[in-house]
Length: 250
Length: 319
Image: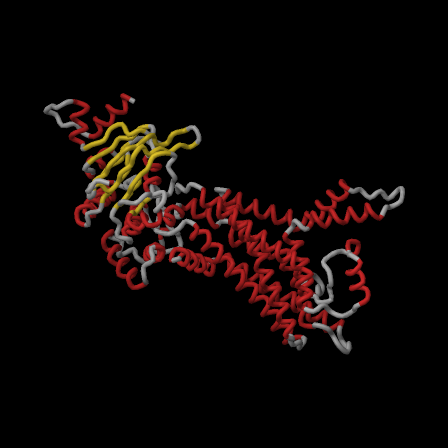
């Protein structure tokens, strides 16, 4: 693997029966960048994330994440990669601390290590006040923030976020986006996120990839995509315009 | 290992703090009090004045009293404990979206299912041991029987077989919770199978036997046909874990039982044994008699768990 590349896939393909969910995906994500996956529902974004995490076996092709093969080294790989699923669930009868404690146990932390880490993370995601509240009573935004805290317990090098801002109110979404950006900046965490909120992706991502029907049809920084699609002009195109143009062509 | 231990610890905590377990414990405690009380009363009435009673301690478990004995109770309703502990093990996590979170932690996927199974078995072991201790205590207090060494061994073996028996049902309900995405479906499927294998298997065995080897009572009964009929009936009903378990435990708990077969199917040696010798079987011989039963019971438990294991490992988890 080239230096500076933390995620690399070659011809990654996933088929379910006759349906192809991901079709020959070849992608490189650099260390320390925020890469946004765009695409309509069912475009294969989640399937790609699951394959990169070793939770789903690719039908063809291969991937390398943090220098590890997700098919063969899944357990080791999951030490370095945190995954926040689209609808992250919690055990309703646990409070925030217990919930984090369980994840810490699964990661093999000792009690003392976990205590310290949990306090620090609750502070980071702004749930200090709600530490002893049952997760069943959590709002969507609080759940999402607790979910982020859970994936941060293991000090990941890479974060996979599946629709992190879906269903959040504008304020909650902005808070979360700022949190993700600060994690990227301060802890040098590489972030791979999928979303169909173009505006938010534009705000966060260094580079984006547009996926439609299992194919990656465009990839690059927003400027380069705009250039490629509309030619060099005075006007700066927004991601929305680029996306819609691609979408119409397919 | 760290993953297995974490899941095991969490599941055990969940079980012990759930209402489900409180209700189950209350029910079991009630039943064990009642059965042991009835057995004790029965023994006092019927054994009054007898000079020497063989194995009075074991009678606490095997005397039916007015309704059923402890051994029968566990055979019939023990499975329910296993089913209640496991019917929503995996699909609940799936519906609430915690399964994907757990398996995206650095653990092997089998840690989830192993941890859940082990936690369930631990609860089962605690429950059954508690029941046996309650009954023993009651026997001491009400009838004043003190167990001998052999009786303690027999009860201990009975306990182990019972744990395997209920663990089989736990494994089965975990399998259903993996196969069916809906909790209601997995609960119904496991209860249906329990009812079939426990209550209707004898009926089914009868139907099969009478179809394959019908006994025609009009023109004289031929002994070969009767024998074959009984053979088929036995074979079919032995496919039920309950029949296996009842056969095994009844022989272990009651030293006077020398075979698990019915009178028709006894071989000449067994016939001789039960007709001539009125002495109890030694423990070793009791075990030899039911060894196939015990092995079969352990085997189906392991097979059931192995199937759930394979299905779960190959299943794609998205939520």
